Image (cartoon, rainbow, N blue to C red; front, side, top):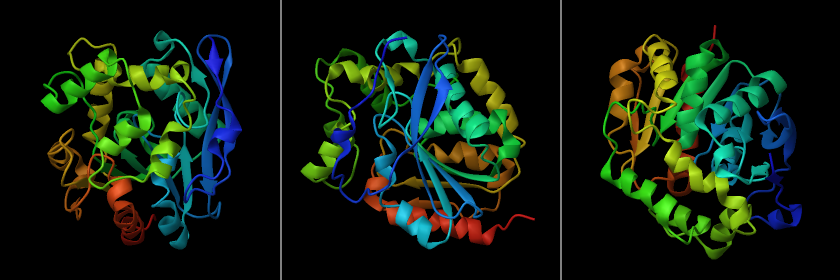
Length: 305
């Protein structure tokens, strides 16, 4: 498997993101190894909050949330998915699959870091991957917070906004990562922040993962990932640990998606679900501190035995 590694100098002087990267290696599924980067801040004995980003962002997305969580004396782990951020980037689109992404995360978080009693916070593809991990390893998770995400099986039609985005990702000759993130926020991002989202991708060769991700979302019942996602839903229908929805009010991609979790997940019953005003698809940019306070409040209100 041919891979690229973004030069470190691309990440110099990132605005409001002083955190040093940590690294683990995972099997690439093709006989080689991939380096995955992650932020790991806060006391190791504290409750662990796992922040999973989506497409086409990286752990930089959580920079407004990490300080709030650290002030609450929590441990924060925020990995960069393979193909994003400081993590290695396979060059060929066919090297990426939904199953491989789940496997890479599983190996990094559980086999390498041995995380347990995790509070998952997931948005966009962070939910598609994180909720699969909950479905396959429910005992590793103490709580779940879902924000602007879902776990599609291909049995329901996706929103027209998503289908348009999926077509754009595959057909557009230009794929400007920073601009894509900026278009998904309610507020305007500064040029420095847009540049930080572009930083992992010196040129188009680095963007295979970002390009292919939207096409991996199950939109048909016979999608390669559909059956595994149905199996994860079967577990979620019995998941009785605290499960909170915290969607934003201005996301055309996932708006209304919180209702299925509130209806089907036992742990969501009676929870103080919230809708965060003023947030676009990337609500971490628009209302990150508010979301972080929701997460910290959930942990305080639901102490583990």
